[in-house]
Amino acid sequence: MPNLVIDIGNTLTKVAVFENDHLLKAGQYQNPEETHIKGFLSEYKADRVIIASVKTTKQPWQMLLEATLPVTYFNSSIKAGINNLYKTPDTLGADRLAAVIGANYLYPDTNNIIISGGTCITYDYIDADANYFGGSISPGLNMRYKAVNHYTAALPFLEADKNFTAAYGDDTASAIRSGVQNGIKYELEGFIKEYIKTTQGYNIILSGGDSIFFDTLLKNSIFAPYIKIEPYLVLKGLNAAIQKHND
Image (cartoon, rainbow, N blue to C red; front, side, top):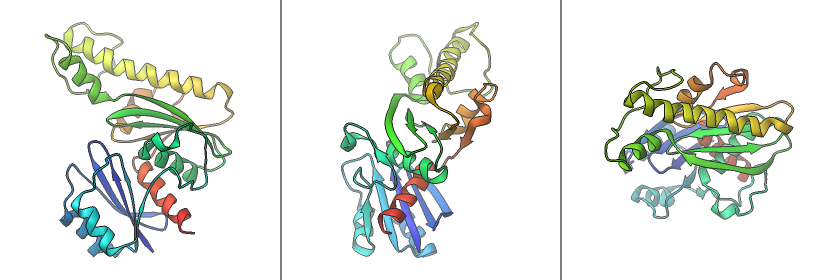
């Protein structure tokens, strides 16, 4: 029974088709159109759809799906095997909850630290007993570079540089890179250290568009052996959620 899984984020909409737990196809779009969605449906004949969205308004292609297939809108009432202890579950971002569900589904009976790098960087933790306690949100990599330029009169806008490894900068450009990229590195390490204070055994799951970049930042750290890269973690979590929700 193929599942069509859609994650509508702040910047990109990600679409995938799963057959049970097997990812058949995935794509991402800044502004998806009906033709994109119809392409997935005609190729794989999905039987059901799950949609997670950070937006409040529906797109025309969502109406198309609602008219042709059973559509589940992902929300905090879908437990999918976890114990959600977030104090305000209705305000918890769908992408964060789906990532937590995905981590618990892929690595059950394990303490999982989930770090997602996208528009924002999110940190979440679910323990080996599937208890989700919450996490943290901070500005993302590109947001930090944009902010340095936007809120100053003289500092330039720079792109991230995966080859930058200096401890500090010796000119304006390298000083910005040091502040942004080393700042994220130290932030990553700091959050992980805090999470593992009372943890025996754990995974560090990196997801989102900047997961590979974050892996590069941490490759020489003591945490490197515990890292697992799951670029489709949110989509896998949504797929797990629709399977459990309909069982």
